[in-house]
Image (cartoon, one colour):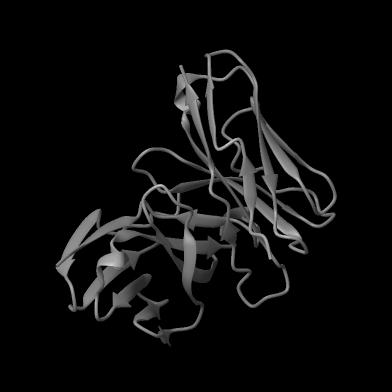
Length: 114
Length: 115
């Protein structure tokens, strides 16, 4: 596969900041996505990076370094409702993959404690 | 407007039976995707449809799996001769195809249990 690695679990306290890392290997990188998935629910889109740098959207930011095959999702001012699984996914046009195909990591289960 | 809907929400079947899972995408979304998510695992791509182009079937795990889509609307995922390893949540997503990143909107999923 695309060897997408992210930590299995993380914990943090309300109000804190947490950084969830994702590393990947691709032959034709064409974008990285972060999704949030609450237990028993469908994933929802959080962010998209295709160029190096930081994309900020409210309390959530996502960073990408294509040369390092590395991304992180930064969550600020954590709230209890942020407890969820965070999925990193890449679009890889190498190896004959098509534009619509995303490769997902296993997800990072974040638990926010009061 | 309405989001992506899937039916049934839960399906319990016996090993060896065939099952059909249905997905109704968001109206106007030309792209439709099927994923499988086993317990504690990430999403595994199965197939996607985009307009009138040939579907990308590269993620289908075996020839027991097939999917169809009628125009730019409903899609059905069929699993023949189900096996216990097919037990998973099957998620459908749809997207526009002309946005910068083709954000995928997911349905609630169908939980399939093969006894």
